[in-house]
Amino acid sequence: MSILEKVADYTLTLQLEKMKSEAVETGRSFFMDTLGCIIAGAQQKPSLLALDFCEKMYGDGRKVATVIGSGGVKLSTCSASFINGVSSHFHDYDDMLPTLSGHPSAAVLPCVLALCEELNKSGKDALEAYIAGVEIIDIMSRGLNSKTLVHYSKGWHSTQTIGIFGAVAAAAILLGLTKKELTIAFSMAASESSGLQGNFGTMTKAFHAGRAGEKGILVAKLAQSGFTANPHIMEMEGGFVNATTGFFDTPAMLERMQTRESAFIDPGVTMKPYPCCKCTHNVIDDIWNLMNKYKFKNEDVEKVLVKAQPLTAACLKYPEAKTMLEGKFSAQYGVALVLVNEKLPGIPHFEGTDITDHRVLETMKKVTMVLDDSIAGGEFFAGNWETRMEVTLKDGRELKESVVYARGEAQNPMTQEEVLDKFKECVNVSLFPEKSEPVIGLLQNLAKLSSIRELIDVVERAARPIAR
Image (cartoon, rainbow, N blue to C red; front, side, top):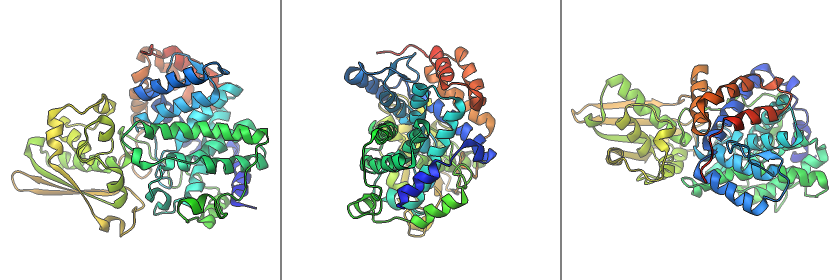
């Protein structure tokens, strides 16, 4: 069998009853977190642009799936998944998977929600398909990315390039694809895989997430209808691996499928406490830890030196960030936010178009980031997002800090109270707070919902009117 046939075979064994209870409960928590991110981004400019486009281009099609946070606008399954995927990733607040070095849930959950609504699937069906999609992303990442992020290091945005395989897996489970049909769908996904890191700091990064889920539905339905594709597309000459990096660790994929361990347990999925690139999180925790330990303020700081591994240096490409989207990919902006505001950043610190706070702009000039090859031992990635920081105060003191596991990672998880606080922060962007409380109750009992439509209806009844 080809590797895609083996992955297809494994995918169709991923039933909720066979999963570890810890993985299921952790998966439910990340399902909730990602829905919060979708709601937070629902009424932001990229999502409204996508909604306007899809209504004009495809508005006459079957209106069977909801554009989340729109107040009940329905479009085709593919269009709804696309828009909701853009919403999920706009704030860059959605989760991270270390093996992927990308955002698995943003690729999978929008696809799951749209299909479950179209097919009137239960909460259990939705949770099962979502978890399975994330598991397949982890397996594919182990083959394509390795511990040193071979695929990601070439400039591919793995949220879409690898994430699409998870969306296909989730769609296949919900649609009831056969092993042969799923293999074809995976092969078609390889041809649809795309996304470049050069578009970080622009709306197109969120577009990547939107397209992953949309394409997952597209190829799954086409494969089910009888479309054909080459089941050996990953390994063959002229196939995915040769066209991208030339690296493919099939033994790692096979070992993972044999052990049946969950990505939600090992390596664990990272829940983001800050709405910005994961590579900024260690930097933010560095400066926050130092300020709390040594009790200094912004006016006491002479300069800040951030020492970064190659992955961090590659992602944080805006030392002189001018827009809020660029600020999400700027070590300088992250440090300046903490120094100026004396608190950890949230959604309001990244709202708007241009960075206009002159205090933040001036403080960014104090911050320098340099490449430190010793962190990753000469590799692109250290296996964690470690950064090191040196702060020189005006009184001559030199303070040092290193954060290996930032807040939100599996090794340093957020508390349940923090998870709920984040969810409320997210949903209150697009929903009326006094109407949103029932959403939490439904999500806490997700597997007992007879239809996912019940959850979506409650969200839409709480939505603020969209301004268009």
